[in-house]
Length: 244
Image (cartoon, rainbow, N blue to C red; front, side, top):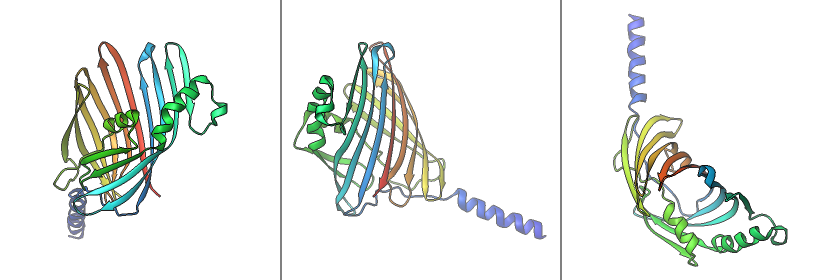
């Protein structure tokens, strides 16, 4: 009888854990600051590739139930590029006089980006309503267009829940599916998969970890394999977001 009672209690406890659900929302507060580390590599085989590391700071300047406004700026950039057999490097922490000629040319392109502020307005679900760059900069404008967070679903999620998102940019459509694989220790673990169509075709796979309380996307690891105009391309993206 005791064994049966113990089994019954264990079953109830297991089911309550298995059925845990979370409402994913960006619960930011005014004054919150975050540090975002982005590491992205783009490999194009014999054509070369690019490795770039970037650090950004983000401050929540306004927050309500309806809208959140953030102000971000790039703190550092480190880039290595291989193109046509030539290696080009740039490190924003290197003094101007210590850069080679190519580094100085790249510095002229990156400096305006690092001096600009990105003002973003989004909903608590993470849907971006508006993005402004001040002062306006073509390279930064392009960067913000390519940078998009995850829009959370309306309803609560539990293990096995999934939702979809779609982005259309530069003649390509990326359809992404997010599936919750685990909820533990205040974090939501999400498997990412998807397809690329249009001017490029391919697939997307990755992992995402979201803080259940704050809704912050703490860690993202993503791999996109794509064929564009006969060129095979692999884009790997890793990012972490930590509260300061």
